Length: 350
Length: 221
Image (tube, rainbow over all chains, first blue to last red; front, side, top):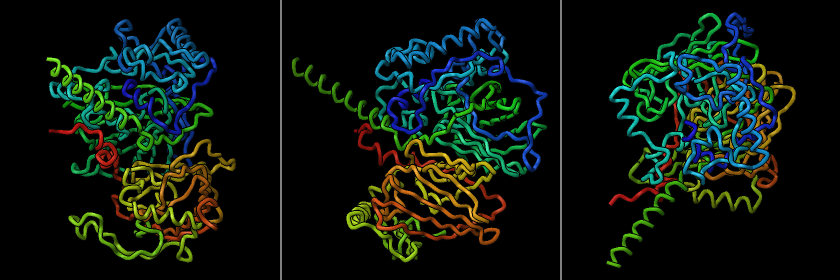
């Protein structure tokens, strides 16, 4: 997902750009481990566990979705590995000061697209380097289960970020097009715009995501899902409380367009999310992705989101500032024109 | 429920831009919602409004699926939902998945950058929610008739329940670059009382892409 954001990030003229802080990154267990499950969260005036606040997944920036093989079934870094990761983050942050192009993390994956490499000051860095080895926690090896044949086909046909000659906008992802990143994409860590705000009212929880400004309104009063004829990118969410945990089940998705784990999911996707406040400033987030038409087994991602004092959600006017769409398509047409002229010249010389 | 999104001022019914759409594409008539009937434009700004009006089928930001701004977001033909908490009030709009958060804390937030939806600080005056909005860009329109503003726009909104399901909505609009004096609009917001009422999705980007990028789509032979 991170690479998908690159051209977009390069060309947007949004107000949402936040600048990297130069404070030293602190390595803490709290940002990686899920915290104390016996913690008792405060309650709202009407007696629901209180999850409200502004949160960010910045600390997870750089944690891969799937686990590197060397960690096996180990979910957390050792103290030494954690110190190394914190050092990497500090080095990346210091490039903001020097103006050098970073050579680690996100930038290391951008071989061959120098022109598109975003400057380091566009990127949010972890304040507390995470101890997680991967975002996927189940299966225990941290790997997304094998795809079904249909899932394989869909992945092969998915928009390719490195496609330098898109015929139309339809060859680009719904993220590049500023339509949506879907439920999981809206919450999984990205290079910036990692804010989310939770609001609560009797019978309702609302979650507002910073990037592409999505809002989910989650009824808690037990109403049925909308009918199968009404589908949407963000799906139809229904929530309930299990002790101190908010459980949200979301269905009725539009299939085949938005990806999770790099694969466009089907219309049968069912997401089960669990939000548990485990410390005054930390909510544990867990989501199970169940889509038998795409993945041969359900899989689960879990990570903590953190309230970071001073973090401000900005209006992310993605579509309104999306110069990249016109630029990419006009560049593709210019390349085609150049090829046609070259071909005409060659045939003249013959 | 009003036709304010077509035109804040009195407007007769008109045919639409595409005859193929017949009555479906026609513009309904409606009474204006501007106090005193007329928006007090400065002379040069009135010319700009008339120009906008002529180009309404090309220049209205709604055609491009751009965020509506305030107050327009509140009278577009799409519902919005209010989620009220002591510290802040969320208004989530169906159109373009836009939203805004009204800060209800005693310490006001200042607009750090200009935005489409503005920066909002609210407080209660008795049973009336008063919202002060600044920090707008100059890109949004007030309606499909080309009524516009500059980045000096300052909107003061007043929301007050008339009964359980009806709310009066007033917006006072100040913009010394465009108008000779502040002016008000007044309308009524109707609560959806259907048992299954909920916002559905209207992500309109897809419906504007051919319009915005059609010139650089690969031509099929």
